[in-house]
Length: 280
Image (cartoon, rainbow, N blue to C red):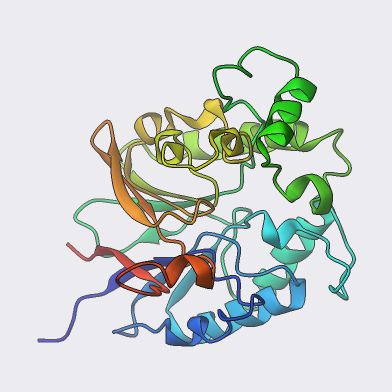
């Protein structure tokens, strides 16, 4: 008897980072029917991101991608100097050309479950609402000042454009409105797999060395989505703390590879992708 189809997931491959170049090549299916979820941060250069996704699409029956913050950076070394929402739109356009599904496409249904299971790729960003106790209720400028004082400011503040929005929080608000509408349209008899780069619930940020960094990790607006939208599983990246956790009985999987200095310190070494679901 052949192997049953599997749903795999990966994130934070950072293929342009020295030491991570070869890890995408080990991501391969066991059956022709396997799917792959990519939870963002493939790399910084737009062309490299698309080339990597195209290679993965050639191997897997279906590839579903959501952007991370690194894909949305506009760095001096990137020939594609598009920024902000236009950069995201360009990534979506190129993904469609190579057959990779995005948050802008119809949500696919995993066909191997015991009941309908919709894969929901989400791009929701963050709105700085995950604050430390001392920053709670303060203006954003004060929360950012405290983060700088603690020695931690996300590089997004320098490299991730947000035009035409006034700021990233406003872009986040737009994405939340759109995403909630689409999630609410999923048939009520479907369970879901919620795929996002930033965690949808705050509990995965608890181990952060600098709790101030949580401001760049998500939003309070999504913290009940795993319940409201019947999640069997939530898949994310961003934190570079790969592990399995639970909230309200729902499994959360961080599937990030991370940087060499991180995966070299783990006993299991680099894990480029993980099995998150098999057919029932």
